[in-house]
View 1: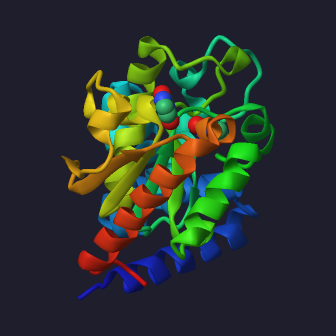
View 2: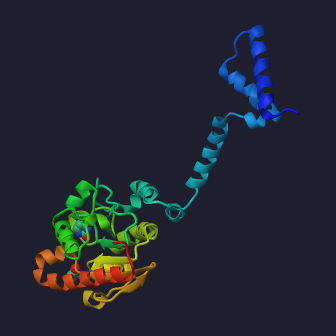
View 3: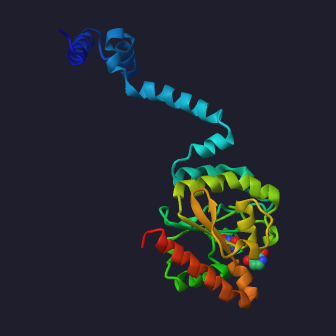
Length: 259
Ligand code: URA
Ligand code: URA
């Protein structure tokens, strides 16, 4: 009884003999002879098969909606790659860089700001300017390193003149941010500023109505505090911010989050 291997050796031997009689075959001709033999289908060159599969997968992918492509991302790298190509994440400021997010992909605490500024746009990383330096100090006050947490923004591109993100920009960005949150699966989300809090909770509340408590959001406990940039202009809000992050640290311990 012939196994595939035996069959393969037989074909090889046959070709070897033919070659002796008729001179050398080109590689393409050799492959064609093997493929055309139905009983030798197991010996089909892998290159041809995978090419067709890749083409079909590409066609299928192109026909997916943006939302389906977002949902299909199972890692932050895949999502980042999709964001790189997403024109709907851009603002009307031209030539900006993607500011995807930074930190521990397995973080139990996720921080969400508003939108990148000039420094963030230049470096492609959220909260690296003056507000970012203050944020690092706020985190350190409750014993978190920047590397322990994950930091992102509502918008992934800088708006012109640092204006507030408009409702349309926010709604175009949210499906990407929601996917990012669902991949990271933080136990606590701290919104930095009223815009971030109201956008995620889909409210139009005042900061004092959102602060202090935890709101259930995509499997996490979400809370809101002052934006670090607001603290630079209004240092009297530092004390209540400190109280808010103390509450975050307490909840972090209560939920048994990673040390
Ligand atoms: N302000 C924000 O809201 N996000 C940043 O990344 C920087 C400043
Ligand atoms: N008002 C805001 O809109 N944001 C803050 O962070 C503080 C006050």
